[in-house]
Image 1 (cartoon, rainbow, N blue to C red):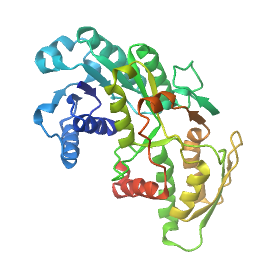
Image 2: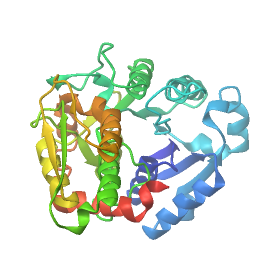
Image 3: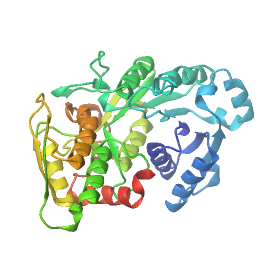
Amino acid sequence: MRVFLTGATGFLGEYLLRELLQRGHSVWCLYRQPGKRMDTVRFLSESGLPRQASDLHWVQGDLMAAADNWPAWLAANPALREADTLLHCAAAMQLHLDSRGEPLRTNVGSVAVLQRLLQMQPMSAHAISTAYVCGRIEGDSVPERLHSRGQFVNVYEESKWEAERLWAGQATLLRPGIIVGDTVTGRCTSFFGWYVLMQAVHLLSRLIGGEAGGQPFDLQIGLPVDAASTMNIVPVDYVAQAAVRIIENPANHRQIFHLTHPAPPTYQQTLEYVRQRFHIDGVQLLGAGAAPALQPRNELERLVCRQMESVLEYFGNNPLFRRDHTDRAVPDLLPPAVTTEWMDRWLDYAIDNDWGQ
């Protein structure tokens, strides 16, 4: 394939780029900031890539400013005319609407921009979405198909749902779960989802000295979460491997694929990990729909309660993602089981790198 890749300097984008190059494809990467490009080049170099300079091409520009400039871009980058595949990974990650209209501006607006490019430059199209476009679902099986508008947990989910409606019938839709770090190194550059909870607990453990030993700190906090519910976390390198292998096969094009974990950890398992890693106790899982039982006894616990409240909306959702299309397309490729070893690796990397600050 000869791939035009957007979002190449982002977290998932870097791994998609690495996977494409490792599998012998040529890639044209759209980027805005020279510093981010250099970070990505450094990541590729540490991975032993690219093997041939002719496989990797860089195109500087702002995707959202390209709507009326594609003819000039193509004239300035004639080699881009060789691209036969569009892989759209660029995205705004804000969970709530900001003053610039993000994430709707980028996640929805970029589709029309790229569709104009496709009118001038025919390519197979593939877009990274999210499995959570289904919205709020309690324990129901979620098929790999377009969804009707649901009750979204945040604006990010809604923006990806809107984008899918625009891509329908034209692009392959690749829906990862909540992306976490590299299975080998723990590397991560985007600390959302699972990391939000871990960062809050890590901050608490530093304040109370929980990791130092002694008696576990008793929080006396109840959360409206079912112990058997899950957070569907998937390693970034698995998502990249699955996505590239899927789009390599034309028989998979214009279908929908869940790049999710078939056996994600339950919240009970996650709670046990938190207890052991941070030496914290007294957190009860009260069941979905229960009112949070937050009973702060002092200023420290009041701080913890506020932080917990800010992430509760993500824990009350429990979709179970079907993988029929994905398992048929890549039957030999599954994410590794989520073990204490994996979670330690992801968490150690986050702490060592100060959560990306």
